[in-house]
Image 1 (cartoon, one colour):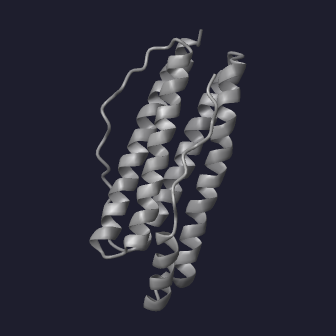
Image 2 (cartoon, rainbow, N blue to C red; image 1 turned 120 degrees about the vertical axis):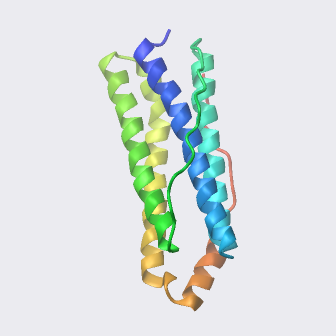
Image 3 (cartoon, rainbow, N blue to C red; image 1 turned 90 degrees about the vertical axis):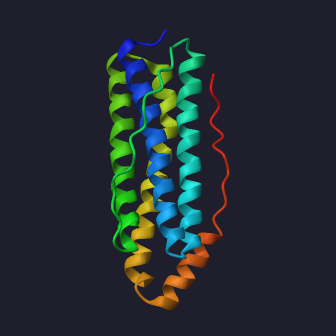
Length: 171
C-alpha cells in the first residue's frame, strides 16, 4: 500500500505530465502555424512522450491499488513572439518537471517507499535526457537558427525525429 502523500504527489504528477503534453502541443501548433513543420514534429513527439509518462504514473498507481484522481488540465498561457521562445520555455519546463520528480523521490525516501523510488529511477534518467535535449535545441538555435538557411536545415533535422514509446516495466 502506498503512503497517502505519495499517492497525492503521483496524482499531481499525472496532471503535470498531461499539462506538459498540452504545452508541447501548443508549441507544435506555434511552429506549424509559422511553416516550421520540423519544429512542430519535434514538439508533437514531445507531447506524445509526456502523455505516455502520465499513463505510466496512472498504471503505477493502479498496480499499487491507489485511486487515480484526474484533475483539470490548465491551458498553456505562454506567448511566443519569436522562434526561440518555445525552445527556451521547454528547457525551463523540463527543469521544473525534474524538480517535481526529485521531490516525489525525496518524499518516497523519507517514508522508505523503495518500490516508488525504484519506479522513479527511470524518470530521473529520462529527465536528464529531456533536459539535455531541450538545452541542445536552445544551443543549436542560438548557433544557427537566426540564419534562414540554417533554420531550414535545423527544421529538416527536427522533421526526422520519430517516436518510440517508453519501455518501463511496471510491476
